[in-house]
Image (cartoon, rainbow, N blue to C red; front, side):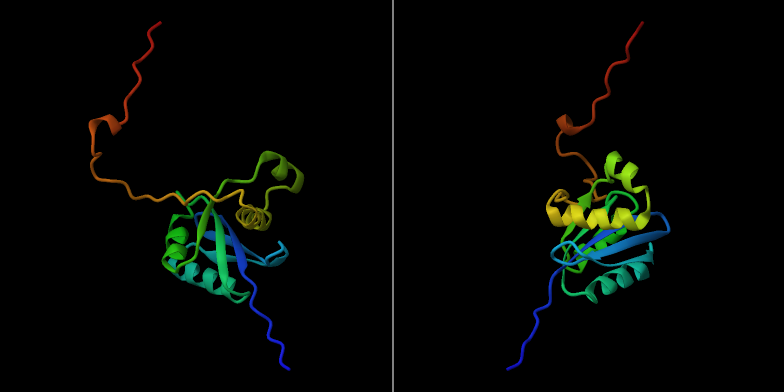
Length: 146
């Protein structure tokens, strides 16, 4: 009799920066499978996703900053059929307790996605060229006079 182990889904987390992204991979029960840094470029996005897939099928990736430094990565992951969750930066208590380090933030991003704390849809940088109705235009508040 042959025993075949089913591949376990992998949850990723990414701490994004201008030049590099630090990724973490977690198993289904939250164990850290690995942490690695990748270039913040198209080639780096492909390498990051390939690295995550070495651990098994990728079910979800929590990305910090999908509206800024993580926008390109979020687009790449969605284009590859991977679910992406917007992750807020870690709370101050966690940062104070564990210190600010990219690997710790990447692991926390993965854990936030895994636990459901970070199920926000990733931000996109696409906006309509014209608002459909004037009521949707931003309105400036009148200046206060002393």
